[in-house]
Image (cartoon, rainbow, N blue to C red):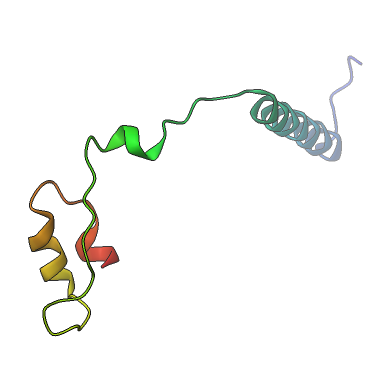
Length: 79
C-alpha cells in the first residue's frame, strides 16, 4: 500500500469515489421528502375570464394582460 499508485489505479479510484458520491446523492433524494407549496399558496387570488373577445375570436396576449390588471406572471410568454 505504500507503493505509488499507477495512473490507471488513480483513475479507477477517482471513478469509484465519484460513483459512490452519485449513489449517495440519489439515495438521499429518493429518501428525503420536501414540502412543495401548492400553486394556490403562491398566488393570493386567481382570476377566471373568457379567452374570447367581443367578436368571439381568441384574445391576443396583450388583451389577456390588460384583463388581468394585477401582477401578471408569464402571460405574454405563455398567452
